[in-house]
Amino acid sequence: MTRSDIDQILKRKERWGTNRAAMELSSAVEHLEREWLAMPEQAAAFADFIPMRLVTLIEVFVREVIREIVDYGPPYLDRAEKLVKGARIDFVFASNLQGQKLSIGDLVAHSISVSSPTNIIAAFEGLIPDFTASLKLSHSRWSEEIDTWPQPPIIQNFRQTLAALTKLFEVRHILTHEFPRERPYESTEIEGFLAATHELLNAIDWVIVDKLKGSVPRTRTAMNIQAGGSLADLEAQMESLLQIVGNKRDVNPELLERSQIAWLEYANREADLHASLVEGGSMYPMVWASAKSEVVRHRIDELQWWLNREEGGL
Picture 1 (cartoon, rainbow, N blue to C red):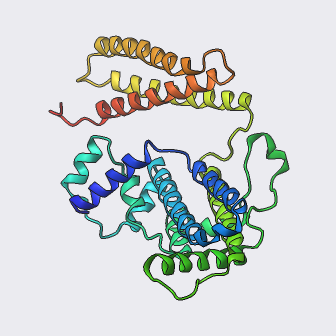
Picture 2 (cartoon, rainbow, N blue to C red; picture 1 turned 90 degrees about the vertical axis):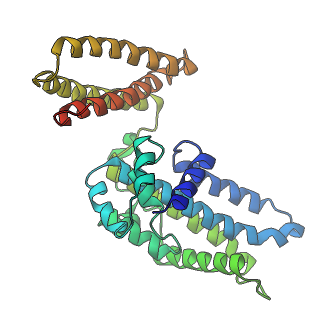
């Protein structure tokens, strides 16, 4: 991976902003569909924009989801090595990784091919061996609806959807790289392209929810409960590491305890600050727990450094 490759990834991340939920891209497809349906007949000349935008949304969505899966950790991080086999991680990438500008997930996500539905599915299969089977059965996985599972799949006709997506990618390639005498698609196919894209993104999103979380809450109350539970799990992991690190011969237990007391004060105030954005609202507990969870994760990383520190390491 060359300096120019890394610069491109960094610029894309800067334009994209902080890591955003993949669901945002699915919503963009819905918005595009509404715009198309509301388009007057005299504006149909701009129909070529739809296939090009849809494939762009798919590509960005896939790279964002791949990054999320790999950065989740084992076993996906272990499997990711095969996807970037032959990629050279040089000093430039390593320095950006150390500064948290890039992650291993970024490397993998920008090393895979997203030039066709077949390549996209193959990339996901490399991380999730049963991905195709899961994609065919994918449905919404709200925690409050577990008793109703399995629900009808999002992709009702997998072969038909895959065929529409394959045609979509072919059309986009022609429109982008050629100047055909006639359109490579019928205007009546646009709605099919939109529907197939929406199905694909939603189905993938719920497969990832299944693999990484099992389910997600839909109501505010359930979200608050889940956020609190996740925080409790992280704090238990942190406390366990604290005990192990405190028993190391080269660690001053008194200073470690004082450091932890000061850190805890900081963590709570940081959570207070974030949650103040929704002061008095029903989201307050969830935002507070999520904000503190992020700080706890960083504390866990610090404790891991102490745990794995080699002799002489500073």
